[in-house]
Image (tube, helix red, strand yellow):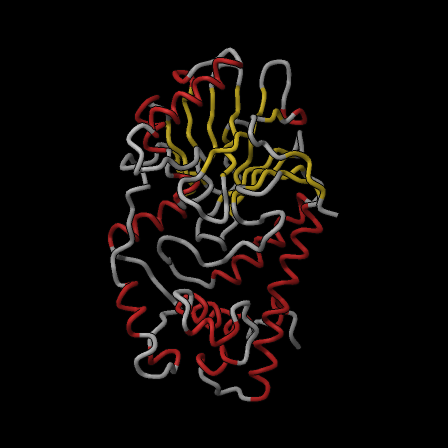
Length: 339
């Protein structure tokens, strides 16, 4: 059973399992700007014997001129309460390139001169977004989906605007992490799906996993949400990464949002069942009509907004893209559970 262990709001929480007399691991809740569905993102701070690492520094409200100074002041105040200071931060690690996780990195790097670490695959997506060299195996167009004329075109025109990358540090990474690399005592585990180069960090000794947004305790994380695509099927990647988590079923889990929890095994199985249920729904439609268009296939699936609501929603293109991914996934019965 998924069991909440703690919620680091409003005060930081020390992770005793990963702390010793010489080092400690803390989780801080960083408020998110705006009025979105998530109030904060969890930032993990490792206080080593002679250095400090910040994992997922959070996001700063760009509309508030004083926000950057307050962010640095709050972090410095916390570090001083533990006998350190802002100047001791020498490493900034991000799990993935979404604004709520990486948005404060440039400010923190500029204030401290720390090294900047990200997975090599996630940096590849950043480079693809900057250079316009992404590879989308599931392009949503009128031709690829069979959508009625005049429905998709306005949304696609809006999405043609270049991706904003102001939240990404201009600084090139000092460390490109690969599978099995070590950072602040944690092992890097590549878990693509939510984004193409999503990173999980695990510590076998303390049995703690920092999972970013690949799996959350109380909502289903999305797949295929990278700032650029570099090929492949994100739903398939997401499913395989969930299965990779089986090695860490008993670990204390630090997600990007929600609350820290135990019961990762049950939670990842629930998330996998959610994917497989959607695959089954897609397969059942295809069994009746193998040549059905993506548009007509999507119209026969279950949507939280209802299909009529989806057609009017800005999420329509994302939804159709995921239907394309699932259509490909069900052709892999070894992954999707089909016959």
